[in-house]
Length: 543
Image (cartoon, rainbow, N blue to C red; front, side):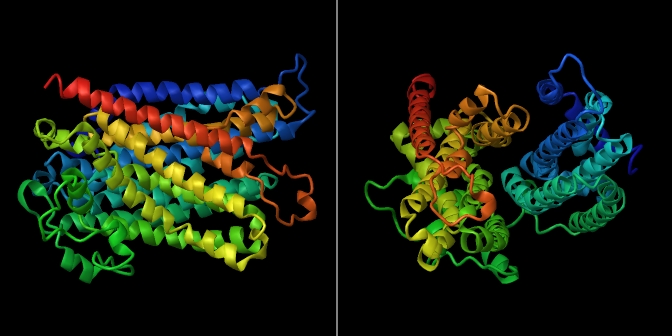
């Protein structure tokens, strides 16, 4: 019932592994890893395996870190919709009424959601075997790295499945999963890189401590999720959970959102009890007051609490103790917006399609421009306010730390970068919501586009700096990173006191910030014009 005759496991495996995206993802995953090894392979015609084993170790470390980051990003995308998908398909109530035990359901969902990622990881073995003849790393270290990778993926999958049991929508489950997994993934990356010169200790840590910690987390989350399915919350029609905001507030632990008080009403306004003013946009009013918060405030509370908990040590170190690391805190704020921003906009239009109300909306007297700006501003308002909560420490640092008194233009540039990032993430999410029919697909494509625009330039420049530091193309790649807010924040000139080790640090330039500003303005303008054109020609006229 749990493994061999588990109908949930059998059905999920057939659906997941027979989808076209499984083969497409496998191809691109292998192609990406193969390109990394191909371009980083020593270019010498005569290779001495004992000449420079440090380069070989650096290549293997980069290979595994790349796999670890990719697996950390993909695990929530497969597992966070395992239970919320049943709720969205309105089959959750029937699943709970089946004779299957809750533990069998959870185990089947978890194994099925992680099976494809496991296949991806093991198919990379032939590529890493090609790196072993270069020396610098033993076979045991490679096997230990794969053990750590598998344990991490299983742990991240357990976290995502647990989050999926607490929410009704995959979007909310996905963003909370990423917020919980991101700190764990960063700790793993930092430990792996810090222990690169101590292979024996890293080997011992990977095969003893990591499996124990991962097993403990998985058992605790598995028991909690199974108990939640055994005693589900109140269910309404079609398996929908009944949300009582007053009861939710009473049972809330920690942060409580008061929708009628400042500053909570900036992103969570109270429900309307009076008629709208003449000329008001009904789409915006509906989105900001009802649609975004129709499933309660659990996701908002978790997002705010987790983000502030992570921000406290980061802002203390990057803004107050070592002000020269201020771009790192700005990068954290941008990462937070990357995760949160698309959630409130990726379902703006797809939700209308899923409820079969898009045709009704298009037959009203509301213009396409009103529909678009109402949905865009509603999602952008919530994500921007949540992101700005993390910017208050930057403004406070300008008052308390004297190093920032002569760097006000740089601080203004940091704030502008964050605000432009908020606009870009919301615009991309709304654009994907216009193009696709399902919210889950719209959200995943949005995350993919954001990663390509924001993170890929950093990965490419890091790879070039590591293996081709003197090549002319390396400098060109740095200058071409105008789509990344991280690169723009890093290059903003910041005149602060550096230590002796930082005397040769690049002072930065305003050119990349100007390029990022221009690129962001052109991208958002183009996306908005395309969406207006689609509404005017593709749907309204054809309808």
